Image 1 (cartoon, protein in one colour):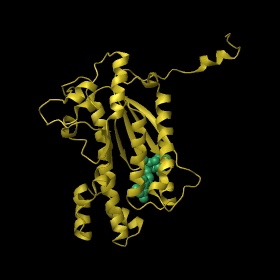
Image 2 (spheres, helix red, strand yellow; image 1 turned 135 degrees about the vertical axis):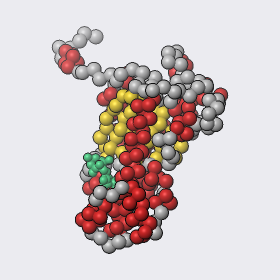
Image 3 (spheres, protein in one colour; image 1 turned 60 degrees about the vertical axis):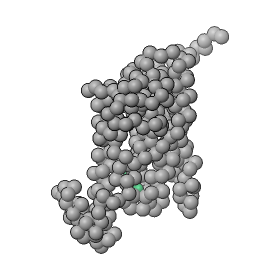
Length: 288
Ligand SMILES: Nc1nc2c(ncn2[C@@H]2O[C@H](COP(=O)(O)OP(=O)(O)OP(=O)(O)O)[C@@H](O)[C@H]2O)c(=O)[nH]1
Ligand SMILES: [Mg+2]
Ligand SMILES: [Mg+2]
């Protein structure tokens, strides 16, 4: 068919392919959730229903996009990690980000009533922004994940102490803020324990560590570097045939998706699940 005279406008489209052979992280974040959480009466500092809903929406995203290897969520944000060899949408940033954002938002709204049974959603409806960043090394990717989990810890310790001072200590927000000014982690732990008999270590893991979602295979004993057969089958060489890629994709799609609240800063989590980072079977990648 002949091109129309309007076809030239396609030339205005900008390429936005992400760097090949890098881990692509798409992070989404709730828009104006300070206001949104007040409107729906989220419990302070953490609302388990809200976190479970975020996790359910993220799990749905992962099951629809088998190229995502792991996701980490805290508060109103979620980071989705695409495997290094991912070629989905030719790695076009706008397609990857918009697909994640819209799929996540659609599920967040769809699943809302399962978690907030007594408060129906009304406009303005929840929305999320998103961005994509490429990380070229395992160290960079792990540092990114660690950054988010450290953020979770710092914010949660602050918020837990802040709200204890208000809810249990009778302070107003200004007084609570004032008494936390210049304090270190140890001071906040001490305030919680001495004033309110709260041992921060006993707070729920989901609040302290956030949530990590991944495809589950058999765990590998730390230090053995002995990857189970299932992992060997799904692990990919850098260059692989299309049919093999399809097979691996199907395998990933079938693997159970689990939600945990684990330490993802230390080596142990990654050492025991080499398939999360490895393209090569039978070895845990180590590089800088
Ligand atoms: N009470 C309560 N609030 C929450 C919870 N999770 C998230 N929030 C709120 O969501 C906010 C998320 O922070 P941000 O993403 O930095 O701020 P935002 O208001 O969403 O603003 P933008 O992201 O810039 O649009 C927190 O500051 C809280 O006010 C929760 O479990 N309980
Ligand atoms: Mg936000
Ligand atoms: Mg946020």
